[in-house]
Length: 144
Image 1 (cartoon, rainbow, N blue to C red):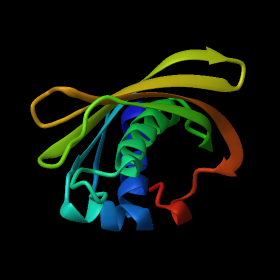
Image 2: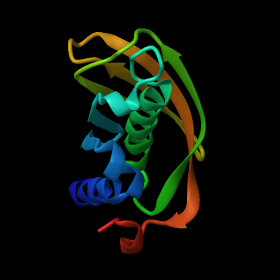
Image 3: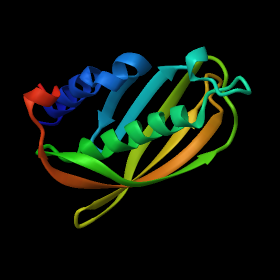
């Protein structure tokens, strides 16, 4: 079940309209672990010529979200909260976000992520809480 679930999640992610613009790549490594990679483009820059913090958030939220979603095969997970720590600016290359589930208490999952630049240096860290929703995973949302 896991590999089929992982493949459907990857298809759903890449089919999401927002990802047509960002062009990230999702990999679900195992239950509770996922990676998101995306190229840093000039369209992502703030006025000082580096990637805007929203790009850091997207990569880390997506990686941690899918780390959690890999454990929840029935319903769509929602991000309830997210904390982000910026460590260094990035203006070129790729960003790689690695997320993993670190805790589960009843319905609340906690996941942590680290964002790396093309040189393997940490650019940011983040953690979030996630809750399963009542929204079923369906082919209509790209889960196929």
